[in-house]
Length: 308
Image 1 (cartoon, rainbow, N blue to C red):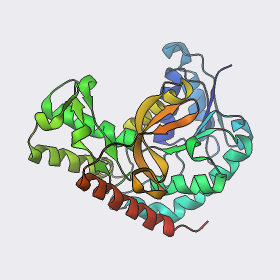
Image 2 (cartoon, rainbow, N blue to C red):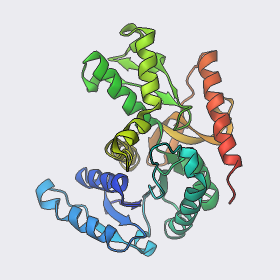
Image 3 (cartoon, rainbow, N blue to C red):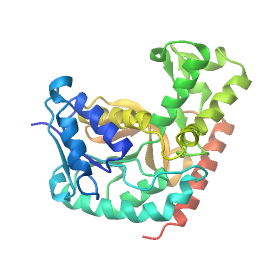
Image 4 (cartoon, rainbow, N blue to C red):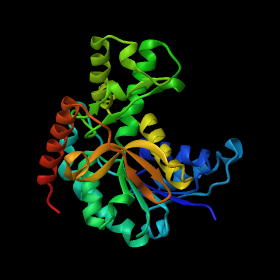
């Protein structure tokens, strides 16, 4: 029996994730949205690409959460997207209500599903979903480090004109301006990028990584990124459903790791069929640890503003 993947919100991010998940045949896909006709239309369109892309996954679009029952993975992309000049925190109040409502419906029909949060502000929305759905921390993660690290990897490869295949990067912390890119743990074929670039160039890449989402928002004017986020979501889904046990940087709820408790943070973790199997604790310098704790403090500040 094929696995079942539910994607809530079929805007650009949700639709892109659904497309890539289907093309990889990771499972049957349910698209759900509050707008009547949109998930049905996009689901049918994607299903009609099956003879061309040669996949056998079944795709359905719906407005009824009953159709999501017994999902193995649910992805929550629902929420108001950022607009130029808007911070992720500006979205807080509106998206808390949306994620709360969505989570209540999802856990009603798929109480054991693994949950991936994409809605912004990302780390706060993870907290909302975990508390509202009473979800154990090994079954809920947020899209942060996979996307942020991918952006950093792209910028490194573009700067040095090397293959994307050989570039790896590590970004921890909140998904936002206080993220913590780690050049020491970012490599090209196992060699630290500090061997290839000056500190000045590395700092420029770090700043561009931190502003990666905003840079795209400013270009698009009326939308935000979706190709890279969609790919990042599917990499996480694949690691779970195929039990690949990949080490990926994702937003996880910390309970003492890195000396931090009570907040979702981007950290490297082992991701398999049981969800979060292990949180990897890197050896950080005093400056790196200070940056991580500063990021955590911002996350806690946002959480303190949430009323459930």
